[in-house]
Amino acid sequence: MTSSTSSPARRPVRGRTRAIASNLIGTVLEWYDFYIYGTATSLAFGSLFFPSSNALAGTLAAFATYAIGFALRPVAGVVLARWGDTIGRKNVMVICLVLMGLATGCIGLLPTYSRVGALAPILLVLLRLLQSIGAGAEYGTAITMSAEYSTERRRGLLASTPAFGVSLGIMLGTGVFTALSGLPKQAFLAWGWRIPFLVGFVLVLVGLYIRLRVDESPEFTRLKKAGTVTRSPIRELLKSHRKHTVLAALARSTDAVGGQILNVFVISYCTSKLGMPAVTALTGVTVAHLVGLVVIPLAGRAADRWGRRPAFLTGLLFVAAFGFPFFWLLQTRNPALVVSAVVLFGVGVEIALSVSGAYLAEMFDPRVRNSGVSLARSASDPLAGFTPLIATALLALTGSYWGVGVFIVATALVSATAVFASPETGDRTPVATGAGRSGKSAGALP
Image 1: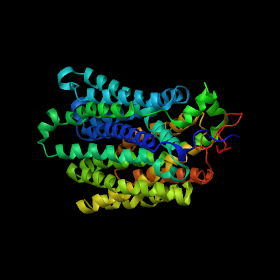
Image 2: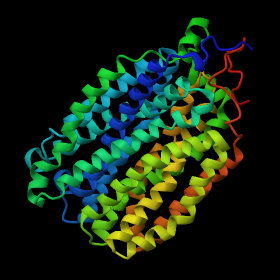
Image 3: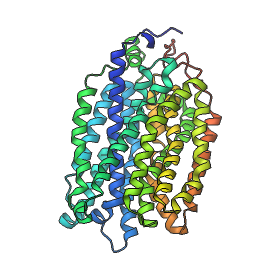
Image 4: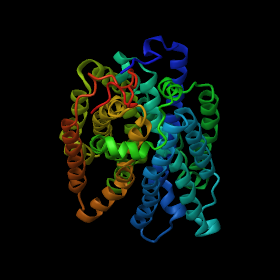
């Protein structure tokens, strides 16, 4: 085995800072896009694009379009992530950013059902799919770039940067909707809901300015110079990393499900089921992600110090333990307790999300890393997308939160089992080390 031709310790700090900033802005846009879509689904899309005499039917139809975007993510993730392993991480990140930003902005320009009939939901679904194609590989590539630009001792911290971007993006989206929640309902449905989507045009311009100035990942550059870039990363991934792909996908399913419960379903639950004003749930989500800005880097640092598995399991087991107390607090309808419930649930989800960055990156060899990380994440994205729909259906079927609580706890326990069955990746150095004659990283998991 040979050592890397470009040690992480020698990489220019300026280039690393620029790369981290690029990754951050991309995940901010990704999750701003998806959060405002989910929030608009809870508050407006049911009546604007899927009018029905039954309010529940309209909400379910709107959530179905939300889920469609996640269902497409595995396909889009595989195609674009494959390019990340063949033509470069940077190129894929630029493509993702443009697709997400343009689709989001155009949603804000759509006519509603009352103006163009069935064409309105059709256009909404098409833009949702375009948005999802870009998002399919964005987060996984951001993790890959962050990990490959990091030093060994700070990989847990720096690889948590995309998770930090998730909280920033959701806070931005929540903040915009919170500001708009003071509008009269008629004004909000007439034009207010469009504003968050039109902001997407601005975010994509800012993101492109930063992203086009970033150098290619040092690890991919090294592979390219050595002539060891694979032309069939998916085939190689499924041949030599199948077990790790399955374990990684199961491990991150809790942040997929928990994130949708936290960011989307809780708003619908508090407003539709509990009859509370939307501002209470929106405030809870905003505060949860504000706390997340502290929790995420601390969790990443803890993963550097004590290992990925202990830190990861802490977040997952917390989610499992808090699954039912979360709903007990919501049931009180006390604004302070509702906000506290959302914040505490968010802590567990954000710990898991933070640690998963380094965990996923270290599970895969550099030759197939982008494909592996993206496939592991996107494999559970359909479950994430259907989570609001599943939770709403369980609520309607049982008439109680118990079905949703069981769903949350079961998912967290499955993830914890997968992490427990996985090797500790923190004591290995697959990102920093070089490739031998086989092209496999010296520290890659066997």
